[in-house]
Amino acid sequence: MYKCYVAIGDSLTEGFGDVIEGFEKSPWPDLLSHSLGIVDFYNLGKSGYRTDEILKELLPQALALKPDLVSITAGGNDMIQLKWSKKQYEQRMRYMIETLTSQGASVMTCTLPFFTKHVKAPLYKKIIGNFWLKQCNTVISNLATQYQTIHIDFANHQCALDLTNWSSDCIHPNSKGYAEIANAYHELIHQHSNRL
Image (cartoon, rainbow, N blue to C red; front, side):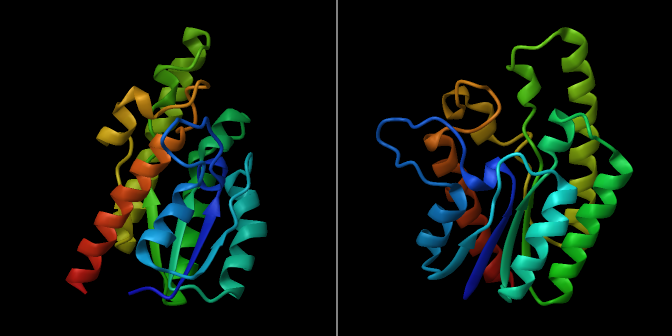
């Protein structure tokens, strides 16, 4: 089993969201590390970070910790901050995944849920957002296949389709949603470990 787990990414990694009664306010990587019994764990997630900032600032920190398990959530802020470029996203995500796997780490990835369905915004913005999200998810799905990452398709996962898992902003999971994300990864990691 894994000895050192580092989580890098944006607010989805940091754990931004509403608290639901009965579920502790804890980011999903923190819940996952606890359920896996990994003591050597670091959550480096930063709300608002784009892929360029994650690559430049968080990736070097992660590499210095010599992890054998790394999770990455990235892309949402590239779109929200109108900095989206499919080409740049693909280049940055490929670089991060390739660098981490070349150092011997197993990498966890995921597609992004279509939060544009529920967020309050003009129709044209939703159309553009959905188009960008489809591009983002196509890129990360292809990279996940190429690099054999531990991957969950949250764009179509029941966890994301259940509206009770979302915060009031319709962008971030709530504490119940984060718990379900952690559970989904926990199951997948055990399946992955059994295949090794």
